[in-house]
Image 1 (cartoon, one colour):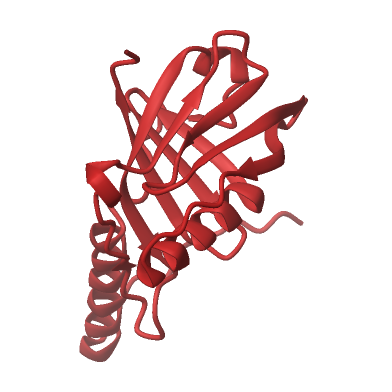
Image 2 (image 1 turned 30 degrees about the horizontal axis):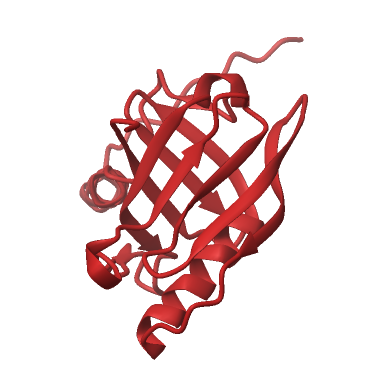
Length: 174
């Protein structure tokens, strides 16, 4: 005998209130994360060939949600001498380089069927302010240990294993 699934209808007032509360909570969570969640047309783990000869500037750094589910952001200074944090994919699609705002870095791309990862990350070691050095170390850690990359037009999201999200905006490659 096959049983057909019939959804329960909220008939009592307390059940209707619970249904509305859960619905509003879901909408509130999506609205709070709207600037983090990519659109349906976004490409997850795009091939490195799609990023050849492109330049990206870090414009937002979302920290993991707190215990209340609120997304927090990290302040991103423009850098010493107004140098922003940037990633530049080379024309061959085999290397990236960029600036942490104080020091320069480079890495090779290692690609497989799941996407690409950054390997052999190296950076210069110029002295910066303690706050800048902390930001730089955290940024290089995220580059080394991210879970996925999502591209949505001129936006590139790098999602870390620690649930931090680095949001980059594409810039003209001079």
